[in-house]
Amino acid sequence: MIPARFDYLRADSLEEACQALASDEDAKVLAGGQSLLPLLRLRLSYPTTLVDIGRLPGLSGVEDRGDHVHIGAMTTHDEVMRSPVVNAACPLVAMATATVADPAVRHRGTFGGSLAHGDPAGDLPAVVLALDGVFVARSERGERDIPAAEFFVDYLESSLRPGEILAGVRIPKLGEGWGYHYEKFHRTAQAWAIVGVAAAVKRSNGAIQEARVGLTNMGSTPLRARAVEAALRGVEVGEQVRPACEAAAEGTSPPADLHAQPDYRRHLAKVLTYRAIGKAAGAP
Amino acid sequence: MPRITITVDGIRYEEDVEPRLLLVHLLRERLGKTGTPIGCDTSNCGACTVMLDGRSAKSCSVLAVQADGCDVVTIEGLGADGSMHPMQRAFHEEHALQCGYCTPGMVMAAIDLLRNDPDPSEETIRHGLEGNLCRCTGYCNIVRAVKRGAQEMGQEVRTS
Image (cartoon, rainbow over all chains, first blue to last red; front, side, top):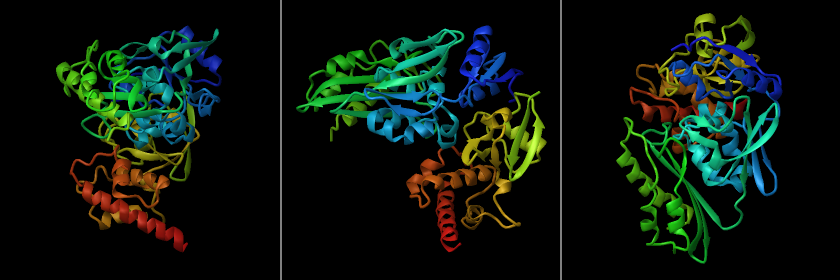
């Protein structure tokens, strides 16, 4: 379908973009457009103005900043998954990004765009949540840090305020001894996750010292499987892992759609968490 | 109405476009590039894939205004002097199509995946074509065609 009418502003500066967004709450940011344009074409969204930040300098690129990696919001998925810095310092991000949609979409879709879009079925929100990323929001008033735990508010809703633009995300480096895996269950290669699990595991002397688990599509926002994280602490990598993963669906409220009912998603969360933890912990 | 400059298959155009005009509609309805079909309306099928500044993109998910100043190559811009591009020829030789609707997008995606791997394995080809659906279920021959096209393109590079 053809989208409904809207005005278009190609911002020449971040300030101009922030101003336009602050003055009209029905204006929307256009980054890569790979989530937004399908919504417009299905007439599920009616913005008054699209503020195109696609050509703003300084919003794109990956930087190693010592204790963390900074990923500019306009960095494309293709750039993220091929970035040597991301692959070395936060491989979970690269792994999950490589499963986003398909190559053509990854050429245009952006890291910040898919996070700000806030779709709990997207792969990156659960990953950034599991890694305790920090979102950097810019507005006319300056810069504000938002911890990942406070960024995702509800379905397609973030804590970005009117007039704020996501400029980048800081991913803390976890350091030595960590293993990672993103386990995604979907019907076709390019489809959204029915359920996805992002896992980071630190091993020490054959036991799990610390585990981080992020859940994709198990509620109206991405979620941390805190009960699993607690149950895994100190557990030997082996038979005790599976019972700990039984808690994966605790505190979730998974959606029902034509792909799966909530009970099936709860079942998937346990199975996929077990697989993700096993692979992240390097279990045979 | 914004005015854009866009190069399509080597020809430069200046067009006044409504912001909501999709790139695929610009190509087909304004510029007559009907070789690029519209498949799904949900950005799943990849039939409308073109090269946008040298990288594959689904032209149904790009606004024409976003492509201002860009270089677009469609399936119609691949061949030279009336002869087919090696990848098109390989699709023909390997019977990699039945109805042909997905073929323009398949060929563009195939050429794109060779940018990162000029001699791709079957697995690389299958992953590289994840965004392109063939509903005649002709994937086996499509994969064979991409392999053959890659070999022929490699030979052309070596001999020229």
